[in-house]
Length: 206
Image 1: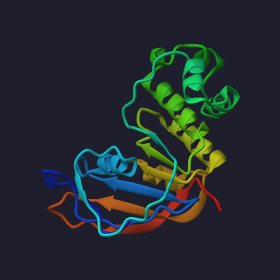
Image 2: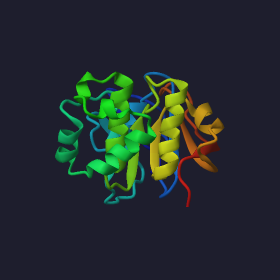
Image 3: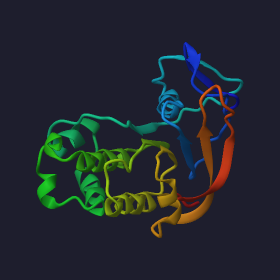
Image 4: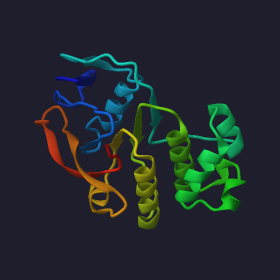
């Protein structure tokens, strides 16, 4: 992707260039209103504004996307059936995330938001996809549960695009393998926006 810019009447951020490589992590950061979620929506073909791009390689990638805000209703079994997943695989991931057996029997809408976030993550990572896109997956989770999420990501080792405010936690976590990854910082359109290359501790390993 070269020289991409997204707009709603006015540009959200200066042009950015990046690649999503198999088995790697692309971490997107930026201030509130800098267009992070809009960029994720563009990648998932849900962006409703306008865009300009100099070059974009067309690929038939299958994407699993967890939005920042979601609304699941019904039992875990119902959600698994709707998504045509294997219940045992989803439960295994939820157990890694520390969700108790008692919670597994409750309707998802009756769980805390942090617990619902765990369900959303387990469902997403149980899907067959080329790229997993996560919008702030550690929000509403305390430090212990954040570590459980990182542990699950290390177990699954997905190709990952994420937006989060906890990059220092990703870097410091002992449950992830160290690997130099791409960090893309978005700044609002009236400021300079540069692709930054830094060392992030990735959940993926070649």
